[in-house]
Image (cartoon, rainbow, N blue to C red; front, side, top):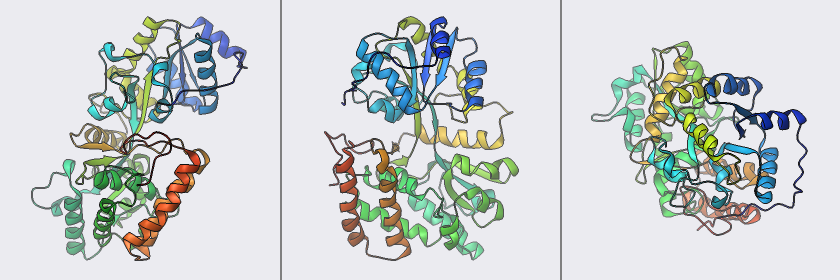
Length: 421
């Protein structure tokens, strides 16, 4: 575990209004999430309605961490509850967060609950809300599903067979992949393909299992619309018919479901030999050890996990619930469709999350470029898989060593920089 270190003075320059509000509130909810003005307003007026007197304050990561560090160093403070991404908590010393195991609330995903332990035996934060990438398909394609396939529990082999069946029936390759200049292809490799086939993303980058992963992707590429190198928002290709089966972020599929909700279906990503790899954007709520009123803070955490609060959070932020809820019928079609798919994916028994990269700082873009360049060399240029992985391995190792970033799930934990084995 990494310990938060800071040489900050205890006095922090904060707007007087924030200090005054915090002083009059029962709980200061200090968050990196729901930062846009309209989302903050919805949090205060809708999500936190009935939760007592709560001062919800959302900040960028820097100011959020600055104040938290100073209060932890001082041994006292005014922050009652924290809201942040998993990566923010993973960078903290777990001892600075209160054990929440006895609250009686948790997510419906055993995988998320395990992540929330931060390597400890107890819950150091409670999963709060999630976003992700999913699959979508034109319902015309459903008739070509391979025999015995369950769309909510597909394997990569079944996905490939499905895409092949559609290709044969229509005479056109209709799998759509976001390989365009603004597409999120790197997230597919980091969060989906690699976890599903290698149970890692950095350590296993050049492994024999990685060779198998790229071989499998080449099989899928045979049935992928070659114009995918120009696709960045797959909602466009679903609507045009250029893609009948597609992968993308929920927000980049929304238009298709909202415009023609009866024509499309959303479903989880496929599984490989190492599980159902997927990339959750997971946010959680936690209590710092310096919270001034532990009882009030714990009551607020419990409030955030109530089904009705989770639905209000969905309306306010477009982040999906982490507990079992009955989604109301008045949600936009895209939200309802994606929400169901995300819930099935994250709660699946074979879920294997590939988390967002953490600890890379300004090298985040270089890290993602390694995976994008590997795709271009192997898939588009037809270069030998082993040769490319061995070459790219050195570039990835240099990034990890320069940043010192430790491993994140599903890679096994590391002391210091995550090794490229």
